[in-house]
Length: 330
Image 1 (cartoon, rainbow, N blue to C red):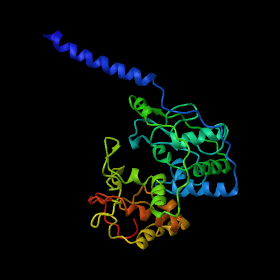
Image 2: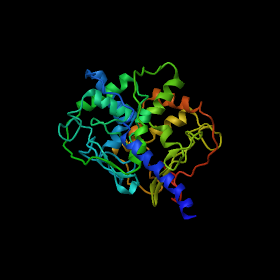
Image 3: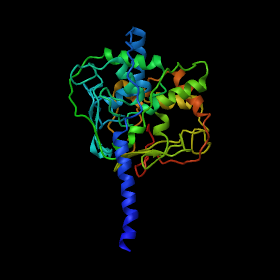
């Protein structure tokens, strides 16, 4: 009887071992980096600065920030130099956010333009490693060829900063599972700025709106609940839950006007210009408001136009559960 019970267990273990072996040996779906050489024109560098520090907020994630202040402003000397990810974030492994300055030893100085573009849009490092999808390459794969080249041009233009960081180590078995995430990206045309909805969808994608404003269960976004809010960030008394961005009339943006939408972003201009106040539980946020205050009216209007077209989903969200009410900006 014991042998009969043991056989299915052995069979299951054999299948699992086979799957692990297959994933271990199977290379990720990747293409060689292109041999492109980006021309660093002033226009391209300016566009790249806007993408890195405003639209896609790469600078917010890859810089050393002051977590004691509202919106986590970039600390003096900390721009794009990378940093260690606190273990309190609960990521599966030990992670570093890479140094994006062109330092030859600790930054991107020795990477080719093609390797940088592949890393940004496909999630493959210069050494062929798969990047953890905390880096939103699943969204950045939609970034146009012109825009991703502008990002590269800008990153090449910033002062190099030496900041050695350890290579990220992704815990087993997550490191195997994410090998299926990357996919090669071919030519991506520029969005049509004359179509506000399509242009807004493009901006909302490369800004990570869907990722942050979609509820997550067991580390994966819930299908069919896109943009409905409910994604929780932080821990302890410092917690924030993303707002419902669907046009639901009671729990989302349904009754918002375009003017109100723009005002919400521009209300933080004084914080960006003069320095934000200390963060409190009632004002804690991971939304890069200090960056987004620089979004142009054209871009914000396009994002709003797109959000008005997504399916309305009823989802009343308490954005700061357990914290005192903040009647000021939040």
